[in-house]
Image 1 (cartoon, rainbow, N blue to C red):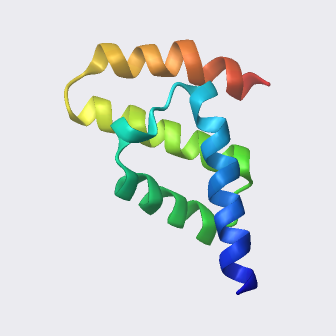
Image 2: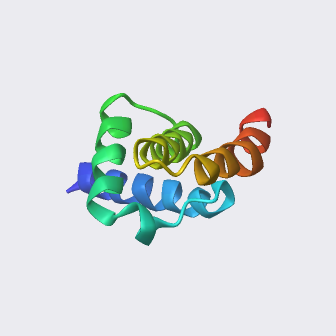
Length: 85
């Protein structure tokens, strides 16, 4: 039961950081978000690293979808200032 509790807290901590990075969890898709968090958990990323990983995954998705303007906005306006800290 303990590992599930740690994982639940980890997901919650990452989810709390995502709005500061401009990531809308509903727009990203819950299952895709959980898939990215599975990868971050497996690689033992910190909560901040995992949040950045999710944000960069969204940028990648926007670029693949052809929405370059939105990808650039997310990257320049939201991710870069937070990453600099």
